[in-house]
Image (cartoon, rainbow, N blue to C red; front, side, top):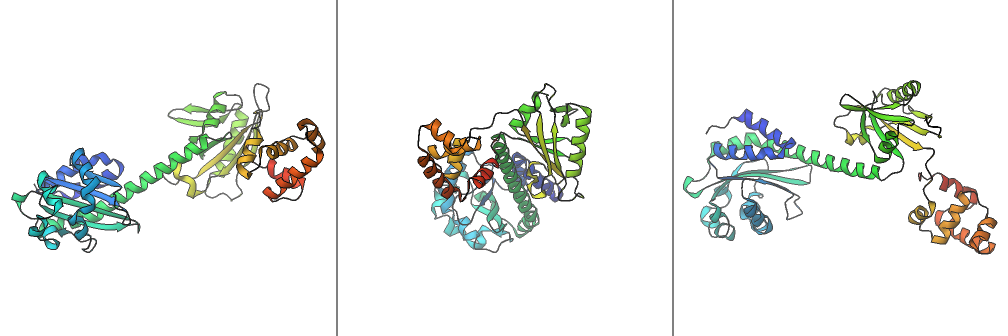
Amino acid sequence: MILDLDAAIGALYDTSLEPQAWSTLGPQLCAAFDAVSFLVFVQRPSEQRAELFETNWSSTVLAEYASHYFEIDSWRHEGFRQPAFTPVISEQFLPEQDFVRQEIYCDFARHIGIRHMLAEWAVYDNEFLCSIALHRAPQRGGFEAAEARQLGILFPHFLRSVRLRHKLQTSDARAAANEQALDALGTGVVIVRGDGRVVLANRAATAMARRQDGFSLHASRLDRVVAGCRSEDTQRLRAMIAAASSDLSAKQAGGSLRLPSVSGGRGYAITVTPLPRHLRTLEKGSAPLALLLIVDLDREPVPLEGHLSAMFGLTRAEARLVAALAQGQTRAEFAHAAGISINTVKTQLAQVFAKLDVSRESDLMRLVLSLPLR
């Protein structure tokens, strides 16, 4: 079978977006090179285990190789002594008579019918070692120089496709982690394009919008769009979003507004700000985006005690004191309610000052009231 290089190169890039495409491309490469199997792997040079495997071996054979034979594979060890970006034929660096006496052949390769190899390797991003290998049965004989040259043409494209796949997987994992973190917040978070179409909304924002009491994330064709419940509120909000998401806007672009509740509540405080370009991993591409932070003004404040203990290492008694002061109680009122002396309150407060690195009660209150705990 003659290898169609253009088609093979295109298929290599397909694997970066759809890894399952290897199930088609791998056998096609094997047929073109008269090979019985192929193996792709990526690993950090400092580690023995591989991070990625693609092969047409059975899952049982791959598990056996990964758990033991990968570490003692003389083809792998000797092959990596050869120059990077250079296709190599196994007999050029490990004579066949030596290979057939080794454990990797006697206990593994011989049983799956492979005896000859054509491979190439390189390191990308100064961190990941990547290799592709084709294997041939004993009766077919070793690979030829012309076949090595064909692999050499394919390899740079193969390396780029693996690197792209790794970058996309890393980006997707980071985006998923970001979304989980955003869902844990009580503050509504919405990321939008310049026209108001929603890229991401966390759980709190979605719950607020579902009430349709001050704003909504209503469907428009296939997209969700942020809007106020009154047309004038929508216009104000959209104008602020358009300004904040413009790459031509000043760094200070954005602002705040209150969307009134239609049911008589206090409504919602919304802050609009440009989303920095380096944080746009939640959206493919680099289109300008805006970030909306939404606070339900009728929502009960989150109890302070637990947060203060976790953030600053306060004891339960110290946290209770700080929370009471933040809610407007005086030291004497707290001492009376807690059944302790005013001197005990002063002692606890001194300990709090030391832990939070403040010297006055006014500084303590300014710090506590600035925490995003709604």
